[in-house]
Image (cartoon, rainbow, N blue to C red; front, side, top):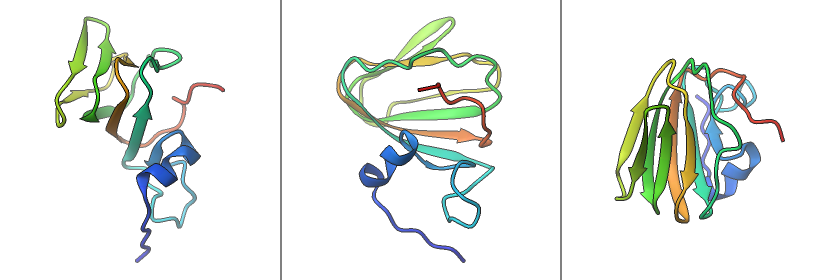
Length: 119
């Protein structure tokens, strides 16, 4: 069994917040083709650089602190209370915006390449 012990605030910057997924090396306890987990710290005003389109995964985004918007084609979901969350699935284009300094946890499945915004 491979075990990894870490701290999300320390580990998250290495992969733009993503702690677990296909992008970690095979053999690392955090490598998975089944699921991705992100610890997102977003300053007020942060916005995803571009919408995700052609989504092939299901995702859950949960608010830990702050005020956070998940933008979907037909509505804007505003998360305001710790524990508020939204789930969207395959084919649901989306983006996000931090209305206040925010911390969110995102879980996506499966873990697949191809959604990273170019630097």
